[in-house]
Length: 571
Ligand SMILES: Nc1ncnc2c1ncn2[C@@H]1O[C@H](COP(=O)(O)OP(=O)(O)OP(=O)(O)O)[C@@H](O)[C@H]1O
Ligand SMILES: [Mg+2]
Image (cartoon, rainbow, N blue to C red; front, side):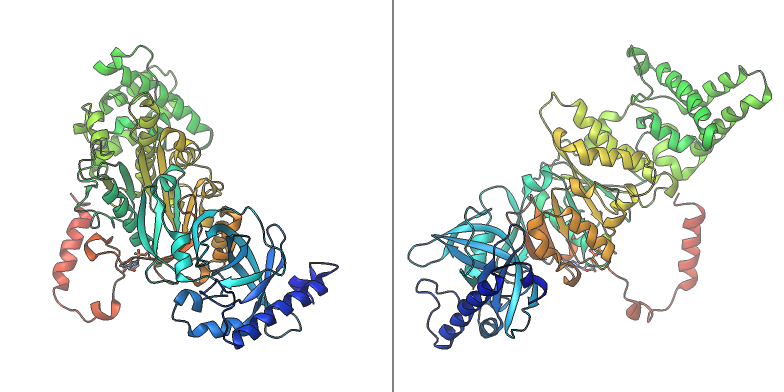
């Protein structure tokens, strides 16, 4: 009588005895092959409620009774009694549904298993058949200890997981059934951000493509921006998305705010950095105010997205430098000028810093990238794999900030909510690091985006590397298998209490399976994702070494072409 059972002090022994008595009763009844309850045709009693105790309720399961269910034709009944499966119990005319969180052998009593459970919700009992219907979250009346416990059936799960009439998308089937559809409620999913987590190779990218495809099918006039660091998604959204990479993104440098300018142009550290930044601020403001657009604005700020000429900026820096008396004072000016000239001349930076990008293309940039109008292609894929790594985070920062600022400045307009999806999110919002501009803007969207109609979708294989608090801002968590303990602990901390039973399954999930909990689902579910059609999958197929290592020929040409591209940096 140690462990779990001993925690209920005092009359626990008695309780246990009487509770076990009930479970054995159930046994005898099952032996006599009589229905366990006159109006419950769906399964025999498998145990009894042992302790009702806030978040730590327990039931006693009878191993023999569970064993007998293994021959059932219904896969849901076969899975009865397993961690992550559900049980039901009757209170008055309602059925309570609970999820099994953990199992252990009752001390000294073979055949008896103690299961910790979390209540999921309740449904009404149909008078004649005893079936469950009208399932809802939350429990109004708890059962008394001693109350019989039954396995849930496919028919029960159908009722529990039936999507109500809110807008929803189908993503797969509810485990362990083969036919009950798992639905995500789109408004709740997007309204409070979502995170898609899983170790490498579990199928995250494909799952992300699947979810986004379903959303696009539902909302062909939607507005989704996806940041794609590996160039995987263009292949998946050829038909229904606009795809951008360094060859056609044409993101003007002047869209950057001051902080982002500093990240690109200021190279010094420590106290020197502040000096350089002050000079840049002064000259940038002057450069912005030189153009026609800048002159029209009476109180121009250094952050305003006003076109200016890079040559104006370097000229102004030179001019300021000329005002210095001592030679030593010119160092910061020279540093800035050198860096700006370097960036301007580097063909790899052309998609952002080309002289061609000086025209005021802000409206068309927003139109193209935010899909306004969606025009049957509601998603834009921003492939940043070709962006030089030193400015990838600035590019993502500008995109994310544009989404957020657009939402803020269009507050009085008809609302056009935007979903921003970030693959490899831990790269942009890392923990334990002083935040860069991209980390700051993404954290801000996580905290405030909801109010302005900006939704965030974070995809990562390393949830423990995400900045603190970001995960808990995600209303819906879609967790695939996570192999690492630290990652599991982080996800556990971000998940609601009632989903704990599901959580313990996370290390044991198969590829393409996930646990979904939070706002986007009525109750936490374990889902096997649908298979996604080949042409809608991201180009992330694992290389097949065994096959590819059998192929030979044309090596010299492969190398020559590669070196050519490499040297010309893709131009
Ligand atoms: N729902 C699915 N339908 C069809 N194929 C799938 C599905 N889920 C995963 N796969 C296949 O499994 C493999 C790995 O999937 P995916 O690239 O999505 O994993 P990942 O978790 O994103 O990996 P990484 O962490 O390396 O990015 C791919 O070859 C993919 O085609
Ligand atoms: Mg991936």
